[in-house]
Image (cartoon, rainbow, N blue to C red; front, side, top):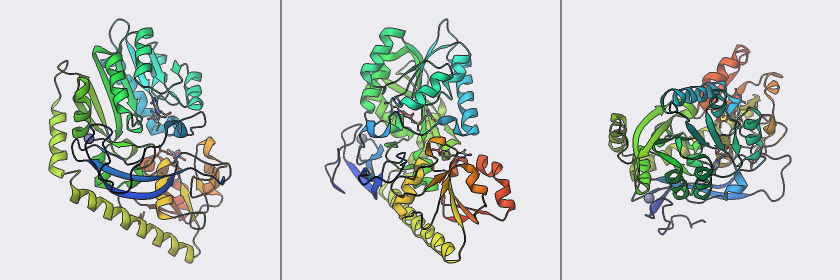
Amino acid sequence: MSSAPGNPEHRCRICGGRVTEFFDFGRQPLSDAFLEKPPADEFFYRLAVGSCASCTMVQLMEEVPRDRMFHAGYPYVSSGSSVMRDHFAKAAGRFLETELTGPDPFIVELGCNDGAMLRVVAEAGVRHLGVEPSGGVADLAAAKGVRVRKSFFEEAVAREIRAQDGPADVIYAANTLCHIPYLDSILRGVDALLGPDGVFVFEDPYFLDIVERASFDQIYDEHFYFFTVGSVRAAARPYGLELVDVERLPVHGGEARYTLARAGARTPAPAVAELLAEEQARELTAEATLAAFGARVERARERLVTLLTELKGQGRRVAGYGATAKSATVLNYCGIGPGLIPFICDSTEAKQGTVTPGSHIPVRGPEAFADPYPDYAVLFAWNHAAEIMAKETAFEQAGGKWITYVPEVRVV
Ligand code: SAM
Ligand code: TMP
Ligand code: ZN
């Protein structure tokens, strides 16, 4: 499961090539393991990231067993952001207009969560199935009229779905594929389930954006892979799948949406070669690029801790905004606890009344933010900045200031 730091024998989960580690965040808790009260035996693992010398896939050096992360108590709900609700409604609309126009179309979503996307498909009366292992959020989807199978998608499950429901016209996964180390089983499953002219569409944080913005908090237990056009193309090829389109998305701090089809079934769009050329020109996984990324991460830690320590010394009141999974990396890597950030507010009910994993900062509801407003708020949900700042204008009117750390530490 793990390798020693810098172990030259660490093998790529995709191609078996040699993976070279480029950053070690040290001991980290599970990013979504919010705690009722700090237990004596909290689970920790080593969070380190490396790049494969052969296929360029960027990946974690250690894998956390999937049942520890995705279970009935998994707290993340997709519909917590109005921007994301719109994003998924639009994605569903596009599938309904383009790919799901045949006589009895069928779409399968991996990691459908609370049904933010499939709800729209269900309302349109189109045949669908969500495959979602986390029971709590799967129940939320079912309550919206979504047909859900509570399981991890993998090859055997894909074969069962194919036998029961027939081939899929679309297989879709948002912020889910990068969570799955056993990508070989997923791609064999896609091969078994996808119709002859079907498409496998997935969107995940784009490594080019992560490097550009030094958004190091995208690296945590659930984000096992960090995809690029180059690495996705290489990973799909052995399974008879071809990358036929790619689109950059503004959501979640910069993502890419990849469209795969059976090799030769569709003509690749120019965007594939264009973005690949850009990745190559930027030398995204070259040693110097990754070392520069690491230096920016270390600088961010130093500046954030210095800033928060100074503000505390001046008697300023600081709160956190958004108890994101991403914040686990920031807080635990920087060693920030309730001494520097006394509480974090978050709109997710399941997170309220808990403490954050590892750093043990209390999480409160959004109403605590205004009671009274703090002087400074660290925006851990920086990927939702526009939505949150529009909602919290009274904070700024009261003299409050936002602190962000992507692409660098600054007071906004
Ligand atoms: N698609 C939603 C979105 O974009 O907001 C949810 C993303 S959430 C970060 C990742 C989801 O993937 C979780 O709901 C988790 O339970 C699910 N998941 C993890 N492994 C999976 C697998 N093997 N098959 C299907 N879903 C999986
Ligand atoms: P995410 O960055 O993984 O989508 O997580 C966003 C977190 O921020 C999630 O726990 C919900 C929370 N949040 C708020 O508290 N208020 C908001 O307005 C938004 C959009 C998110
Ligand atoms: Zn590889």
